Length: 175
Image 1 (tube, rainbow, N blue to C red):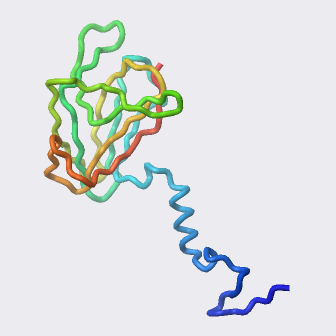
Image 2: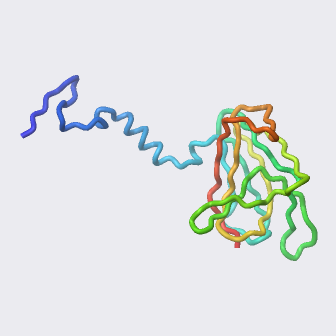
Image 3: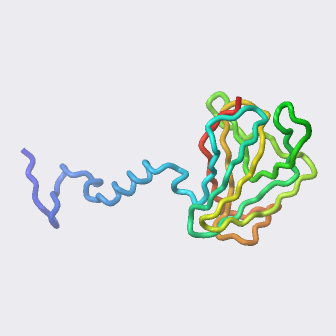
């Protein structure tokens, strides 16, 4: 029979683990495990549907869900072919890295132009959104990744500072 004595209103002895003496730590740990990654971020990327056809326009939206402004870089000089059957190309500035899942691993697609592009910063105030329509010619399971900085107003996209945060969209399919 194990005897238990009370010390400061709690049982003492070997029968009690270190975690049971710290119930607040258990609650914090449970919250961190169960809260999705996007819920802990200041910025959220919203893709309007779970699937798209090749070259169909995807109007992804960045929303600032926090209480401080954020900054991120947008690459200008990116062009996309219009929908299949339509003539021409259109400018599609994009702040995202596009990633495709292949063999169980995510890798970034090389979408930007090799030369002639320009990267400029954009500010997004709390509660506001910016929309970026673009098209993909690659097929597969995709997601978008955004690097951003909280409270930074003088972001130099050619010489990025430390302290970046990242957020990802939910995955979607292009077929």
